[in-house]
Image (tube, rainbow, N blue to C red; front, top):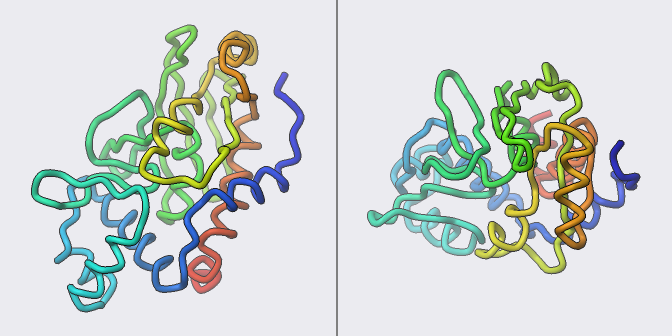
Length: 218
């Protein structure tokens, strides 16, 4: 049993907390995510080639994007929920590569932005049970266990560099509604969604945040 929520309204609320990208920034952010999906840190050179822009333009735009994490060589290692650095329990599997996601929801909305079918693995923080599923262009499939749900939290402010601490740490997969209820009872403002609802929420949010880039892709 999951909580009852208006997915359309949740998408509006989430989009309001997301960065406000213009068309060029939408294209850059998608290019950055797709470069990270190759599984290695992304330098300005690779991103410049991917966006067909001058290095100084790419550098300036990248500085304006929130939630960009870099290594000691100033290469991008994480952005918008995807990282090439191993962290946490959430994994996105693409063509034999395992990348880390900041939270459970990232694994559901990122495959759409990457244009990929993805395998997902995680672990229930209450039972310790292994969780797996496949994210297809048509939605989630092959859920193991079958009753997996997702905890969620509506952001109280716009997402920024503290998004992992303020949002992602509250968004997990659970092996059952009962396990999720035990966890959400101890974490104020959290609630549960079915995996299908969380996927649909991601689709709606993607269309709102990356409206120009996703429209051009259709």
